[in-house]
Amino acid sequence: MNRTIWMRALLVILAIAFSTAAFAQYDESDTSKFSAFIGLYQPSGATLRNGGDSLWKTFGVGYSLKMDAAGRPKSYVAVEYSGSQGDHFTGKRTSLTYMQMFRPKPKSEEDVRGFYLGAGVSANLVQEKLDAQDFVMPPIPGEDNSGTQFGVTVVGGYDFGSSFYVEGRYTKMSELAKDADFSGLSVFVGSRSLF
Image 1 (cartoon, rainbow, N blue to C red):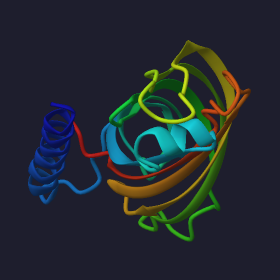
Image 2 (cartoon, rainbow, N blue to C red):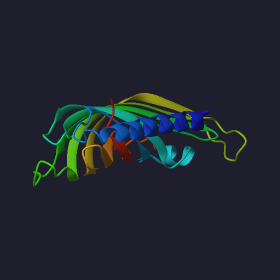
Image 3 (tube, rainbow, N blue to C red):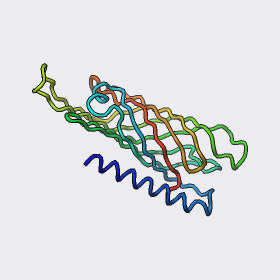
Image 4 (cartoon, one colour):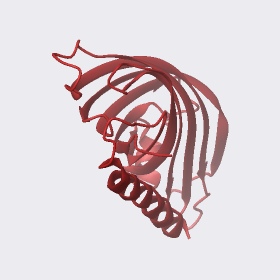
């Protein structure tokens, strides 16, 4: 069931990206304040990496609060979901992030490709659940930790134009419990050609 959700999310994002890219040929300069992205997330905590997948699938949407003349975000908010599930493990992270972006001054108005950096803050709803495993020696006790973690985020990315981008983010949070550190690196691709 979890794979079905991921496949549907991927298909929706790809359908939106390709359909809007087809319409973008009529007016390439129109970018949206909305964006969608999909990628991978690697948490720092040993329990989180070893219980399920070491790389968690992640997807999200963003909204640009302020844009530069080329239609790229200067500040934005994003909602991101990451999750992993193993035989005896479930991990989830839902983040609300505010980012401020910094780009070098473009050489011309048409020059929309290039690297950028950013920094921001996030509020993260996190959950780590490990089922008890009595059938192994020594037995592994179960644990169920959830809560709200606040984080500081740094970002780096590359714009392939005003519509498509690749981005990497590192978010630092305090540990939820022993070996349940949701700090981690996200890497994803996204499109700003929505709606």
